[in-house]
Structures are given as C-alpha cells and as structure tokens.
Image (cartoon, rainbow, N blue to C red; front, side, top):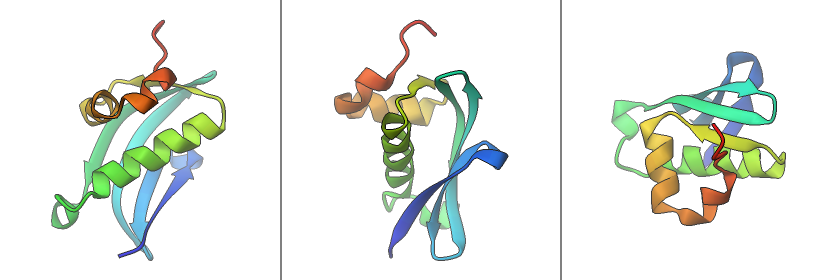
Length: 95
C-alpha cells in the first residue's frame, strides 16, 4: 500500500492517504513560524500498520523543509519525537 502525506492548510491538517482514501490526519494550528500539533487520528482499520508513524514523519519532514518549529501538544506527535530524537531539533523549547 503506497502512502502519501499531504499538507491541507485550508483544513489545518496533514493527511495520510492510500490513493483517494484518507487513513489518518494530524491537526495543527499555525502561529507564526510554529506548527502546533493538536490532535492525530488514524482510521481504526489502518492502525498497527505504521500509518501514524508515516503521517507524523511526513508532517515533520515538511515542517523542517519550510524552516518552521514544532509545538507537539498532541501526545502521539510528542511520543514520536521522543522515539525519534533526530526530530528533537524541530521542537520550539520556548513554547
């Protein structure tokens, strides 16, 4: 299953898709150069297959590519960063 992660700024979220089907989302709010991740959810039928990790990795890679900072209010995003310290530099410690 080929997964793609796309920023949907008008909806304030990143989506992970398999074809036309949305399998998960990571909701965020933009505050200047910060991306505040507030909630992540994955379709229950797709849980356990790495969909959530693919979603968060794609979102964080996009944040990095745009030179932005992360405020991980969502526990899933926070946990992902803790397990993958190569993304720790994105966290805005002042938030």
